[in-house]
Length: 379
Image (cartoon, rainbow, N blue to C red):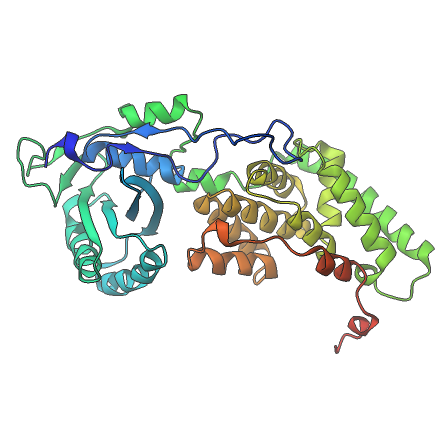
Protein backbone atom coordinates (compact mmCIF):
# COMPACT_ATOMS: atom_id res chain seq x y z
CA UNK A 1 0.00 0.00 0.00
CA UNK A 2 1.52 3.31 -1.04
CA UNK A 3 1.07 6.63 0.73
CA UNK A 4 -1.61 7.84 -1.68
CA UNK A 5 -3.63 4.68 -1.14
CA UNK A 6 -3.93 5.06 2.61
CA UNK A 7 -7.62 5.39 3.56
CA UNK A 8 -7.17 8.41 5.80
CA UNK A 9 -6.09 10.62 2.92
CA UNK A 10 -9.10 12.91 3.49
CA UNK A 11 -10.07 13.43 7.09
CA UNK A 12 -11.99 15.87 9.24
CA UNK A 13 -10.74 17.28 12.52
CA UNK A 14 -12.42 16.04 15.67
CA UNK A 15 -15.71 17.20 17.16
CA UNK A 16 -14.02 20.29 18.58
CA UNK A 17 -15.91 23.04 16.81
CA UNK A 18 -14.03 25.70 14.88
CA UNK A 19 -16.46 28.43 15.85
CA UNK A 20 -19.66 29.40 17.68
CA UNK A 21 -22.79 31.25 16.52
CA UNK A 22 -22.61 35.02 16.14
CA UNK A 23 -24.85 35.38 19.19
CA UNK A 24 -23.65 32.49 21.35
CA UNK A 25 -26.51 32.77 23.83
CA UNK A 26 -29.05 32.05 21.10
CA UNK A 27 -29.53 29.09 18.77
CA UNK A 28 -27.74 29.51 15.43
CA UNK A 29 -29.80 30.61 12.47
CA UNK A 30 -29.67 28.43 9.40
CA UNK A 31 -27.26 25.53 8.82
CA UNK A 32 -24.17 25.31 11.00
CA UNK A 33 -20.86 26.13 9.29
CA UNK A 34 -19.12 23.14 7.78
CA UNK A 35 -16.28 21.59 9.73
CA UNK A 36 -12.90 22.33 8.14
CA UNK A 37 -11.48 19.36 6.26
CA UNK A 38 -7.84 18.53 7.00
CA UNK A 39 -6.28 16.41 4.27
CA UNK A 40 -3.54 13.99 5.16
CA UNK A 41 -1.75 11.49 2.96
CA UNK A 42 0.38 8.68 4.29
CA UNK A 43 1.43 7.39 7.69
CA UNK A 44 3.59 10.38 8.57
CA UNK A 45 0.68 12.75 8.09
CA UNK A 46 -1.48 10.50 10.26
CA UNK A 47 0.62 11.48 13.27
CA UNK A 48 -0.13 15.14 12.60
CA UNK A 49 -3.80 14.42 12.06
CA UNK A 50 -4.04 12.59 15.39
CA UNK A 51 -2.54 15.67 17.07
CA UNK A 52 -5.17 17.84 15.40
CA UNK A 53 -7.89 15.49 16.64
CA UNK A 54 -6.63 15.63 20.22
CA UNK A 55 -5.86 19.34 20.27
CA UNK A 56 -2.27 18.71 21.38
CA UNK A 57 0.82 16.80 20.32
CA UNK A 58 0.74 13.45 22.13
CA UNK A 59 3.78 12.24 24.04
CA UNK A 60 4.29 8.75 25.51
CA UNK A 61 0.86 7.79 24.19
CA UNK A 62 -1.07 4.91 22.70
CA UNK A 63 -3.70 6.12 20.25
CA UNK A 64 -6.61 4.53 18.43
CA UNK A 65 -8.36 6.45 15.66
CA UNK A 66 -11.74 5.23 14.40
CA UNK A 67 -12.40 5.55 10.66
CA UNK A 68 -15.91 6.56 9.68
CA UNK A 69 -18.01 6.60 6.54
CA UNK A 70 -17.27 5.59 2.96
CA UNK A 71 -14.25 7.91 2.78
CA UNK A 72 -12.73 6.58 6.02
CA UNK A 73 -12.63 9.94 7.76
CA UNK A 74 -10.81 9.96 11.06
CA UNK A 75 -13.44 10.18 13.76
CA UNK A 76 -13.41 9.33 17.47
CA UNK A 77 -9.82 9.24 18.70
CA UNK A 78 -8.77 7.57 21.93
CA UNK A 79 -5.51 8.23 23.81
CA UNK A 80 -4.02 6.69 26.92
CA UNK A 81 -0.59 6.97 28.50
CA UNK A 82 1.78 4.25 27.36
CA UNK A 83 1.49 1.46 29.94
CA UNK A 84 4.42 -0.37 31.47
CA UNK A 85 5.09 -3.69 29.68
CA UNK A 86 3.62 -5.69 32.57
CA UNK A 87 0.41 -3.66 32.31
CA UNK A 88 0.05 -3.89 28.52
CA UNK A 89 -2.53 -6.69 28.55
CA UNK A 90 -4.70 -4.87 31.09
CA UNK A 91 -4.48 -1.64 29.08
CA UNK A 92 -5.53 -3.42 25.90
CA UNK A 93 -8.42 -5.12 27.70
CA UNK A 94 -9.60 -1.72 28.91
CA UNK A 95 -9.55 -0.22 25.41
CA UNK A 96 -11.54 -2.95 23.68
CA UNK A 97 -14.99 -2.13 25.14
CA UNK A 98 -14.46 1.57 24.47
CA UNK A 99 -13.78 0.93 20.79
CA UNK A 100 -16.71 -1.53 20.66
CA UNK A 101 -19.13 1.06 22.09
CA UNK A 102 -18.41 3.30 19.13
CA UNK A 103 -19.38 0.56 16.70
CA UNK A 104 -16.41 1.13 14.43
CA UNK A 105 -15.10 -1.63 12.20
CA UNK A 106 -11.95 0.11 10.91
CA UNK A 107 -9.22 1.75 13.00
CA UNK A 108 -5.66 3.02 12.91
CA UNK A 109 -3.27 2.46 15.81
CA UNK A 110 -0.24 4.54 16.76
CA UNK A 111 2.23 4.73 19.60
CA UNK A 112 4.33 7.83 20.23
CA UNK A 113 7.12 7.47 22.75
CA UNK A 114 10.78 8.15 23.33
CA UNK A 115 11.57 4.43 23.08
CA UNK A 116 10.18 4.13 19.56
CA UNK A 117 10.15 0.53 18.38
CA UNK A 118 10.16 -0.76 21.95
CA UNK A 119 6.40 -0.13 21.92
CA UNK A 120 5.78 -2.24 18.82
CA UNK A 121 4.69 -5.29 20.90
CA UNK A 122 2.01 -3.17 22.60
CA UNK A 123 0.66 -1.90 19.27
CA UNK A 124 0.65 -5.41 17.81
CA UNK A 125 -1.08 -6.82 20.90
CA UNK A 126 -3.87 -4.26 20.54
CA UNK A 127 -4.11 -4.86 16.79
CA UNK A 128 -4.42 -8.61 17.30
CA UNK A 129 -7.13 -8.18 19.95
CA UNK A 130 -9.14 -5.83 17.73
CA UNK A 131 -8.74 -8.09 14.70
CA UNK A 132 -10.06 -11.04 16.70
CA UNK A 133 -13.17 -8.96 17.40
CA UNK A 134 -13.79 -8.24 13.74
CA UNK A 135 -12.20 -4.79 13.59
CA UNK A 136 -10.04 -4.08 10.54
CA UNK A 137 -6.75 -2.47 11.58
CA UNK A 138 -5.69 -0.55 8.49
CA UNK A 139 -2.49 0.97 9.87
CA UNK A 140 -0.14 0.45 12.81
CA UNK A 141 2.42 3.18 13.40
CA UNK A 142 5.19 3.26 15.97
CA UNK A 143 7.01 6.56 16.40
CA UNK A 144 9.58 8.33 18.47
CA UNK A 145 9.89 12.14 18.28
CA UNK A 146 11.89 12.00 15.02
CA UNK A 147 11.16 8.70 13.24
CA UNK A 148 8.14 6.56 12.46
CA UNK A 149 7.82 2.93 11.43
CA UNK A 150 4.81 1.28 9.83
CA UNK A 151 4.09 -2.23 11.10
CA UNK A 152 1.41 -2.60 8.45
CA UNK A 153 2.96 -1.41 5.21
CA UNK A 154 5.68 -3.73 3.85
CA UNK A 155 6.65 -1.67 0.80
CA UNK A 156 10.19 -0.30 1.39
CA UNK A 157 9.61 2.38 -1.23
CA UNK A 158 6.76 3.68 0.88
CA UNK A 159 7.68 2.80 4.45
CA UNK A 160 11.37 2.23 5.08
CA UNK A 161 11.86 -0.71 7.50
CA UNK A 162 14.70 1.30 9.05
CA UNK A 163 12.28 4.11 9.84
CA UNK A 164 11.17 7.31 8.16
CA UNK A 165 12.23 10.71 9.54
CA UNK A 166 9.44 13.18 10.19
CA UNK A 167 8.78 16.58 11.72
CA UNK A 168 5.17 17.10 12.76
CA UNK A 169 5.71 20.86 13.06
CA UNK A 170 6.31 21.00 9.30
CA UNK A 171 3.35 18.79 8.44
CA UNK A 172 0.97 20.04 5.72
CA UNK A 173 -1.93 18.64 7.76
CA UNK A 174 -0.89 20.74 10.75
CA UNK A 175 -0.54 23.80 8.52
CA UNK A 176 -4.07 23.22 7.24
CA UNK A 177 -5.32 23.04 10.82
CA UNK A 178 -3.64 26.32 11.73
CA UNK A 179 -5.14 28.02 8.69
CA UNK A 180 -8.56 26.61 9.62
CA UNK A 181 -8.25 28.05 13.13
CA UNK A 182 -8.07 24.65 14.84
CA UNK A 183 -5.71 25.01 17.84
CA UNK A 184 -3.07 22.34 18.46
CA UNK A 185 -1.06 22.81 21.65
CA UNK A 186 2.46 21.57 22.23
CA UNK A 187 1.55 18.85 24.75
CA UNK A 188 -1.14 17.58 27.08
CA UNK A 189 0.56 19.49 29.87
CA UNK A 190 0.03 22.69 27.88
CA UNK A 191 -3.64 21.80 27.53
CA UNK A 192 -3.95 21.14 31.27
CA UNK A 193 -2.29 24.49 31.97
CA UNK A 194 -5.22 26.27 30.32
CA UNK A 195 -7.19 25.44 33.49
CA UNK A 196 -4.49 26.63 35.90
CA UNK A 197 -5.08 29.73 38.05
CA UNK A 198 -4.74 33.05 36.23
CA UNK A 199 -2.53 36.00 37.14
CA UNK A 200 -2.50 36.91 40.82
CA UNK A 201 -3.56 40.52 40.21
CA UNK A 202 -6.66 39.45 38.28
CA UNK A 203 -7.54 36.87 40.91
CA UNK A 204 -7.17 39.49 43.62
CA UNK A 205 -9.64 41.76 41.84
CA UNK A 206 -12.11 38.91 41.52
CA UNK A 207 -11.56 37.98 45.19
CA UNK A 208 -12.67 41.48 46.16
CA UNK A 209 -15.80 41.11 44.03
CA UNK A 210 -16.49 37.71 45.57
CA UNK A 211 -16.35 39.17 49.08
CA UNK A 212 -18.88 41.86 48.13
CA UNK A 213 -21.22 39.41 46.39
CA UNK A 214 -21.11 36.92 49.25
CA UNK A 215 -21.96 39.70 51.69
CA UNK A 216 -24.88 40.77 49.49
CA UNK A 217 -26.17 37.20 49.28
CA UNK A 218 -26.05 36.89 53.06
CA UNK A 219 -27.94 40.16 53.45
CA UNK A 220 -30.61 38.93 51.05
CA UNK A 221 -30.98 35.71 52.99
CA UNK A 222 -31.28 37.52 56.33
CA UNK A 223 -33.83 39.97 54.95
CA UNK A 224 -35.91 37.04 53.76
CA UNK A 225 -36.33 35.91 57.35
CA UNK A 226 -36.14 32.33 56.16
CA UNK A 227 -35.36 29.75 58.85
CA UNK A 228 -33.94 27.51 56.14
CA UNK A 229 -30.22 27.26 55.24
CA UNK A 230 -29.08 29.76 52.63
CA UNK A 231 -28.49 27.07 49.99
CA UNK A 232 -32.10 25.84 50.38
CA UNK A 233 -33.88 29.19 50.56
CA UNK A 234 -36.07 29.55 47.42
CA UNK A 235 -35.89 33.36 47.29
CA UNK A 236 -32.09 33.26 47.30
CA UNK A 237 -31.88 30.42 44.77
CA UNK A 238 -34.43 32.04 42.49
CA UNK A 239 -32.56 35.33 42.50
CA UNK A 240 -29.28 33.56 41.83
CA UNK A 241 -30.76 31.58 38.94
CA UNK A 242 -32.15 34.74 37.35
CA UNK A 243 -28.83 36.51 37.77
CA UNK A 244 -26.86 33.65 36.20
CA UNK A 245 -29.23 33.48 33.25
CA UNK A 246 -28.74 37.21 32.70
CA UNK A 247 -24.95 37.02 32.98
CA UNK A 248 -24.84 34.16 30.47
CA UNK A 249 -27.29 35.72 28.02
CA UNK A 250 -24.58 36.73 25.53
CA UNK A 251 -21.80 34.36 26.63
CA UNK A 252 -19.26 37.14 26.35
CA UNK A 253 -16.06 36.56 28.30
CA UNK A 254 -16.98 37.92 31.77
CA UNK A 255 -15.31 40.93 33.34
CA UNK A 256 -14.14 40.87 36.97
CA UNK A 257 -17.59 41.72 38.34
CA UNK A 258 -19.38 39.04 36.35
CA UNK A 259 -16.63 36.49 37.09
CA UNK A 260 -17.04 37.02 40.83
CA UNK A 261 -20.82 36.86 40.66
CA UNK A 262 -20.82 33.67 38.60
CA UNK A 263 -18.33 32.01 40.95
CA UNK A 264 -20.46 32.77 44.00
CA UNK A 265 -23.82 31.85 42.53
CA UNK A 266 -22.87 28.52 40.93
CA UNK A 267 -21.43 27.38 44.25
CA UNK A 268 -25.11 26.81 45.07
CA UNK A 269 -25.86 23.49 43.36
CA UNK A 270 -29.41 24.30 42.14
CA UNK A 271 -28.10 27.51 40.57
CA UNK A 272 -25.16 25.66 39.07
CA UNK A 273 -27.59 23.26 37.44
CA UNK A 274 -29.42 26.17 35.84
CA UNK A 275 -26.12 27.22 34.24
CA UNK A 276 -25.56 23.59 33.22
CA UNK A 277 -28.99 23.43 31.56
CA UNK A 278 -28.22 26.43 29.34
CA UNK A 279 -25.59 24.49 27.39
CA UNK A 280 -26.20 23.07 23.93
CA UNK A 281 -23.88 21.58 21.34
CA UNK A 282 -24.03 24.83 19.37
CA UNK A 283 -22.99 26.98 22.35
CA UNK A 284 -20.75 24.51 24.18
CA UNK A 285 -17.46 26.09 23.09
CA UNK A 286 -18.58 29.52 24.28
CA UNK A 287 -19.72 28.07 27.63
CA UNK A 288 -16.35 26.31 27.95
CA UNK A 289 -14.53 29.61 27.45
CA UNK A 290 -16.69 31.42 30.00
CA UNK A 291 -16.42 28.77 32.72
CA UNK A 292 -12.70 28.19 32.13
CA UNK A 293 -12.18 31.92 32.66
CA UNK A 294 -14.27 31.87 35.84
CA UNK A 295 -12.44 28.79 37.17
CA UNK A 296 -9.01 30.33 36.53
CA UNK A 297 -9.85 33.59 38.32
CA UNK A 298 -12.11 32.45 41.14
CA UNK A 299 -10.70 31.62 44.59
CA UNK A 300 -9.82 27.94 44.84
CA UNK A 301 -12.65 27.37 47.33
CA UNK A 302 -15.15 28.40 44.61
CA UNK A 303 -13.42 26.86 41.58
CA UNK A 304 -15.00 23.38 41.66
CA UNK A 305 -18.35 24.28 40.13
CA UNK A 306 -16.85 26.42 37.31
CA UNK A 307 -14.34 23.66 36.54
CA UNK A 308 -17.09 21.05 36.39
CA UNK A 309 -19.13 23.28 34.09
CA UNK A 310 -16.10 24.03 31.92
CA UNK A 311 -15.26 20.35 31.66
CA UNK A 312 -18.82 19.43 30.79
CA UNK A 313 -18.95 22.13 28.11
CA UNK A 314 -15.67 20.82 26.65
CA UNK A 315 -17.12 17.30 26.52
CA UNK A 316 -20.33 18.58 24.91
CA UNK A 317 -18.20 20.36 22.29
CA UNK A 318 -16.40 17.06 21.58
CA UNK A 319 -13.11 17.95 23.29
CA UNK A 320 -12.66 15.03 25.65
CA UNK A 321 -8.98 15.77 26.31
CA UNK A 322 -9.76 19.25 27.65
CA UNK A 323 -12.67 17.83 29.64
CA UNK A 324 -10.29 15.39 31.36
CA UNK A 325 -7.92 18.23 32.22
CA UNK A 326 -10.78 20.12 33.89
CA UNK A 327 -11.74 16.97 35.80
CA UNK A 328 -8.19 16.49 37.04
CA UNK A 329 -7.86 20.05 38.37
CA UNK A 330 -11.28 19.87 40.00
CA UNK A 331 -10.39 16.58 41.69
CA UNK A 332 -7.21 18.16 43.04
CA UNK A 333 -9.26 20.95 44.64
CA UNK A 334 -12.37 19.01 45.67
CA UNK A 335 -12.24 15.21 45.41
CA UNK A 336 -15.57 13.54 44.60
CA UNK A 337 -17.37 16.72 43.48
CA UNK A 338 -20.62 15.27 42.13
CA UNK A 339 -20.86 16.85 38.67
CA UNK A 340 -17.16 16.21 38.05
CA UNK A 341 -17.56 12.53 38.89
CA UNK A 342 -20.57 12.30 36.59
CA UNK A 343 -18.47 13.81 33.80
CA UNK A 344 -15.54 11.50 34.58
CA UNK A 345 -17.81 8.48 34.28
CA UNK A 346 -19.05 9.69 30.89
CA UNK A 347 -15.45 10.17 29.74
CA UNK A 348 -14.32 6.79 31.03
CA UNK A 349 -17.18 5.11 29.21
CA UNK A 350 -16.51 7.23 26.09
CA UNK A 351 -20.16 8.33 26.01
CA UNK A 352 -20.67 10.46 22.87
CA UNK A 353 -21.92 14.04 23.42
CA UNK A 354 -24.99 13.34 21.30
CA UNK A 355 -26.27 11.12 24.13
CA UNK A 356 -26.78 14.11 26.44
CA UNK A 357 -30.17 15.72 27.00
CA UNK A 358 -30.56 18.91 29.07
CA UNK A 359 -31.96 18.85 32.58
CA UNK A 360 -35.79 19.12 32.30
CA UNK A 361 -37.26 22.47 33.33
CA UNK A 362 -39.53 20.91 35.92
CA UNK A 363 -36.57 19.35 37.73
CA UNK A 364 -34.71 22.67 37.68
CA UNK A 365 -37.75 24.43 39.12
CA UNK A 366 -38.09 21.80 41.84
CA UNK A 367 -34.42 22.17 42.77
CA UNK A 368 -34.84 25.94 43.14
CA UNK A 369 -37.71 25.32 45.59
CA UNK A 370 -36.44 22.31 47.52
CA UNK A 371 -38.74 20.48 49.96
CA UNK A 372 -38.29 21.38 53.61
CA UNK A 373 -37.47 17.76 54.43
CA UNK A 374 -34.06 18.36 52.89
CA UNK A 375 -33.27 20.92 55.59
CA UNK A 376 -32.80 18.09 58.08
CA UNK A 377 -29.09 17.12 57.96
CA UNK A 378 -30.11 13.52 58.61
CA UNK A 379 -32.37 13.45 55.54
